Length: 427
Image 1 (spheres, rainbow, N blue to C red):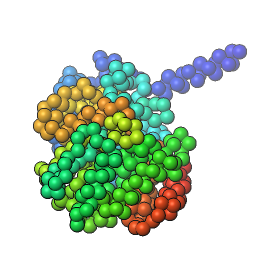
Image 2: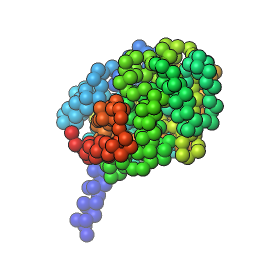
Image 3: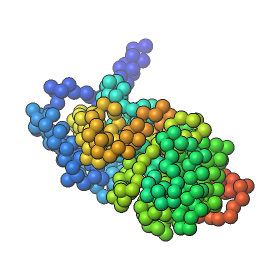
Image 4: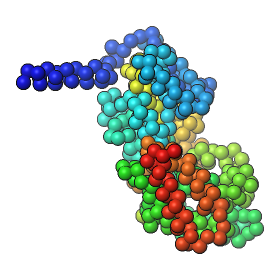
């Protein structure tokens, strides 16, 4: 019995030693430098604003943020963090890192990210949009805070609607109406109603608007062979066949979907805030609407958060947490949004002036709060699934003409089997 008690006490001691300590504000060390690794240029307006805001908030501690920009970001960071783990944390100081949420499973599963459950307050978690909060977790644990987020909306070329005498749809349009509009544009030479780039992110509305999802992340099974998924991608293939949608190859002939849109060849796109900003740099003749509604009959979108995380090798995790806590606070999120770094993850951020500047921005913001909005699907091997998805569908489906429905179905099923292999860690 004594031996059992001793073993339990030893185990408890190990847990307490291994767990990150949470220092009260007055106990935080002073005169420190917190190194923040990212792919952003540290001279970017938003980065300067975040640095200045944080250092002003903790001026009494004389704490300084040092941004470190890394090229070939993810491979470099995996290598650096693995090296530091092997060295027992000795060497280069990496206190905070930027990470896209779809990479969290990969980094968390190999132990390079610190769990943040003991740092984050329930108040902070409750302040986030539900679809954003969900994307910060992996395997039941919190691993990141939100840097910014984007949703997906429809982008419409208003000049093309006017030129071809086609009435702009309203906010409550449906996928049937969207497809009909595409076919109307397709009746004109050199004109299409829609264009795709072949990426799984921008094509995901063709899955969830038909009631499906890309994969089962619990059992690591790709689900593109299921009825709803087949229906959505069959509808898209028909739209390409009927001239209502540019194939990937056709869009590339015009320099990609943004150029095809801005040059008057593609009337509509599905995409995030960054895509709207990109086309906005090419033309003023566009507007934004919510995605058309699908089988649910309700407005729907998906979120893709970029995040901040504390590496498990951080030598000062308390300050690392304080940095990402501030960056993801309502104040920090407002700084990032107003500097065009993306939408805030919390409705508490004051972005009213930013929204008023361009009225169409409200649709991206409103999509964060839709009941059916969910994070883009991800998994430990999700990035491998996504990259192979793009290659396989471009080569075998979107740029191939003349398939009947059965041939298309069998082609998609074959691709799906290959993608399940990648979800299981195949390479």
